[in-house]
Image (cartoon, rainbow, N blue to C red; front, top):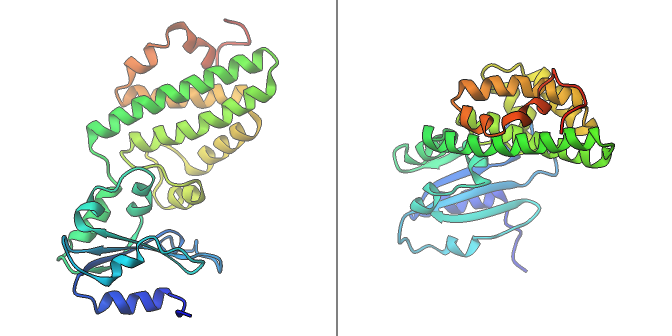
Length: 247
């Protein structure tokens, strides 16, 4: 029976393998104070292009102690999607490329302006859509649907707010950790998280409208008038000043 692969054992192996140019630790162990006795070590082993290494056989290794992904520098550089946030707060354990691995990791936390603006426009429209549906459902007495739409809208809102700041949205697990250390400009972390939690839990229409008034101001300042104005008179149902009338 092969001995269990531990993080310490992996460190020993990668340290002595010349094909390895980087080791990156992500997840709970990369977020100060978030690791528990149940947390595994989630790592990327970065190898040189075309390198021949026995470590390639560890790609996809999963255990309660250790998750391993083996990748080339080029593949690592182009990782996107849900990995972007994880890598943006990852720890660089080994960097044999004179800082290139650290530079790639740092770059994951900052979107290009055009990319961020396009993403923000899409998330703004999705947020407005779920908010609009929630308010209409509450007006019509469909309270379960109203709460579900409200909860959906909070996920879209978070994507929007982080996109406006050109950052990837953190996983829900790390949301408070992230905002306590790196607040969103123009937002007080405590009140924002309180409103998001209350909207997601209750679907309170007045609170949704109040929050939307703040979001609309931020979105217009960021140049998203076209996305908002495309909603036309339906915006009136989302704003605080309208009572339960309208279409």
